Length: 444
Ligand code: NAD
Image (cartoon, rainbow, N blue to C red; front, top):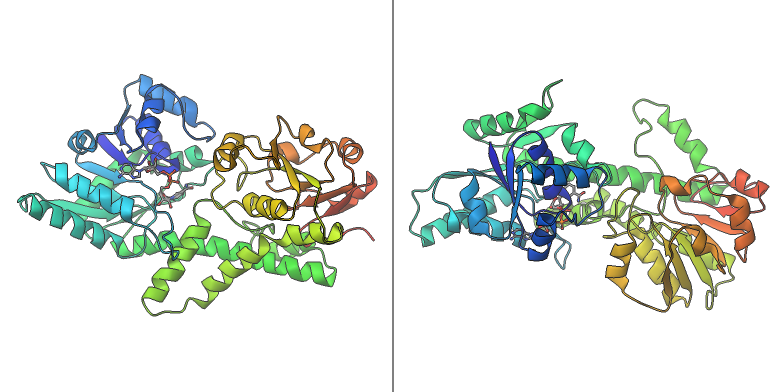
């Protein structure tokens, strides 16, 4: 079977490579000619565990092809996946420009029937818009005779474990109102559906909403825990004990109830905002989701408030070591990362940042360029030299069991601001370090 992927970012490239590994031949189309050239030369544009060898092997085997020519892509297969970005518009709603450009491009170049599968995260009703855009384009070409169908197949991979998630998905949502399309997609996903049934077929609109509902639910869990962490902080309780206490109830469970300095990344913030805007545009007031978003925005300044308080409200001339820049471990993605809000607030207050991240250094350089108040260090130890305090922003494994004595002797003030609650304040105390966490009680 041959497949085409439009958009080779975190989703398109990973899913295309996983399909190629399963034995399909996949043509990847991207408007970013540099990215295409790099991939053809074996250079992988993103950090994702397991991706590099997967791409290289499949390029070598001729299973993974790249082009920036949409015409070539459209001609390659009846099955066309759209996995382009859906960034937030100015008002927070999903910008469907890239999705609709691809749809028009497919209609412009097609000469045979096509199944268009939307993998990008899109608001309910987008498949209808794609259908309308393609119908208009075909009418302009005088080719109303050409048949096509539009299906929804949202992606649930997590950055940092994207290859594993696509190889062994929890579920495969197929949204279509057409039995033939359902059969086509069931056949495509058969290699990933062997051990137990993972395919959940439904109508297109339900599939589109399933993706937003999943991300809204996950974001709600995080904001809920962050709200509880704020209460714990005020009342002198320890949120980690509370977390363990509530997770024991199987109706609540332990998954995804970690407090911290807010969710970030390329999905949660924009998807929650897009769901809010879609609801409001339809005259519905999404009270809960607005609160989830508001708590998250507040939460990003949680550590900064603590830092300011510790240093008497004046950070001018201070230097902070920062461990972690990516919005979560095992990725280089810094889109909407809490680290950015924190760094920018520290700069605004007149402080300097000395940062290290195992994967996101290039991305940080790309975003901020050279600036006198940012020093990107070779390793986590190097960030500590001359720093007033250490701030932990991303819970990379490399940061979880540090040499507290070395930290204590390198820092000007014996204090760590732990934005991910990875250190036990009582252990810090033994090394003479004050650890300020998110809702954790410090030894009195
Ligand atoms: P990305 O920004 O990493 O990649 C998008 C790619 O699309 C870019 O390479 C861009 O050049 C390309 N593109 C834009 N217009 C194009 C066009 N007309 N033709 C061909 N290529 C074009 O985005 P991503 O993170 O892979 O996300 C893609 C979609 O999947 C989004 O809707 C996102 O919300 C969703 N999603 C993302 C994740 C994630 O963890 N990143 C997870 C699930 C779903």
